[in-house]
Structure formats: structure tokens, C-alpha cells
Length: 327
Image 1 (cartoon, rainbow, N blue to C red):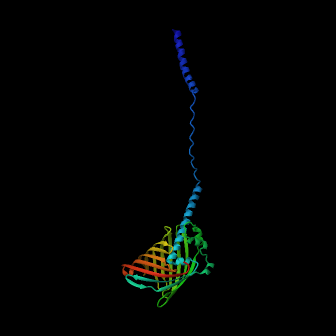
Image 2 (cartoon, rainbow, N blue to C red; image 1 turned 90 degrees about the horizontal axis):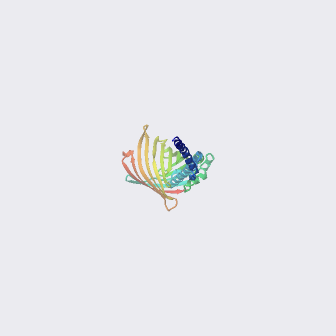
């Protein structure tokens, strides 16, 4: 009996000790499953260095600024030439003679203004004491394209003060003649081109006069220009002071025609106080006729003037102008 119990005990120990060993041996003997190949991860582009990003952004902004600058210069120069603006005459390297007369209907009354002949002289001798905008920049500004580049910093550096002389005669009874000296300069600041001029003149009728003007231009599209005008007029001899302010939209319709939409607010200085003197809403259509050097200008207007207690006035002006010189 005692021997049988001892046998059972030995058998139990063998089972308890050998079972885990056999299970572990069998587990080691089994082939291990093949490890799955790691799927190659898609390559993530390395982040650009900070300097590269800044350089790319700076280059893009610089190219955009040059394109916008060229567009506003080209468009402003073109519409000013079409409208016969003195700014366009000042920027040319030739003298220009303009002879024109205006017919009008003012608040139901018809009439005509005196014939006026104006000669805007180009003074090459003044180039010895001043540096004009270089021919390269001027040709770039007049090119009919938006891809040619203009460097604003270079433009501002090389665009010096420009001095021009203007004289003329008004055919009336008695005859009125005048002479003016005008100092002008243009700046490119951001997306705007600013044109400033200071003018002093003398005429037989009004004697000494002074005008200060600042015009800011921005090209909305290739053919649409936004302009804001601030101008001060001082009749030095007659002791009168007035100003004009307001926006304009100028649209180039074709190579020979353009139209503008103008809102103007005029003030007058009397008794040490500025008064609202005139408000006008107008449009000007101007085109070159098939006859060379002849321009037609149609100018309808609604005005509210202080002298008429700001009653609405409906005016129409029609002007014919002969231009001799480089357009």
C-alpha cells in the first residue's frame, strides 16, 4: 500500500514538471511566422528653410508691385494724353501748342468762351540743373503692356523735380495773355502713383496766381483708373483762396477715346472761414476726330452752387481743340 502511494507521488511530480517543459519545447520547435515587410512610407517633402520661403514671398510681392506700378503709369500717361492734361504735356520731351474753344449751355443759357491758345514749352536747358526721368523709364511707362517691370525704388530715385514753362493768349476784348512756371514731380508709393506740382503764374487779367496740386492714381483694371484730386488756388493779387477735392474714374475706351466720371467739392475762403462753394457731378467724353490733331470733348454736368442757394444747375460744355505737337 505504501509502495503504491509512493508510485502515484512520483508520477504526479513527473507530470507536473515535464508538462510545461514539453509545451515550451514544442513551442520552440514550431516555425515562427514570417515577419511582414514594412510598407514603405510615402516620402514627406522636407520643409523649405525659412529663408527660402521669405525669398519666394518677397520675389512674388516684388514682381506684383512692379507689374502694378507699370500698369498705373501706362494708364495714367495714356488717359492724360487723351484728355489733354497738363501733366501729360509736362512729361513729354517736346513742346505742345493747344488752341481750343468751348461752347456751353449753362442753366438754360447758351454761349461760348473765348478762344484760348496755350504753348507748353519743353526747356532742355533746365536738364543741366535737374535730372529728368530717364528715357528708359519713360518708354517703359508708355508701353501698352502689363508685363514690363518698373522698379518703384529706382523710379523714385531717378524721378527728379521737373520744371516747365507755359504761356498763352486768350483771344478776347481786351486780349488776355499769361505765363506760368510749374514745378512737378511723380512718386510711386505702393500701388499708387502720386503727382505733385506747384505753379506760379501771371496774367494780364488776374495778375499773380498760385496753384498747388496733389493727384493720386490707382489702376483698378487695365483700362480703368481711379484718381483723387486735391488742389488749392490762390489769387495772390486779388486776395482770393479756394480749393477743389474729389474722386474720378477714368476709362480708356480705345486708343483715341476716353471717358471720365467726376465728383468735385469746392470750397472758398472768406472772412477767415472756409465755405462750401460748389458741388458737381460730371462726366467728360473726349476723342480724337478722324481729322488729325483735332479733339472733341463733351462735358455734361449737374452742379450745386452757393451763389444760387445750391439749386441744381444742368450744364453742358462742348469743346473743340487743335493740338500741335507730340501726343
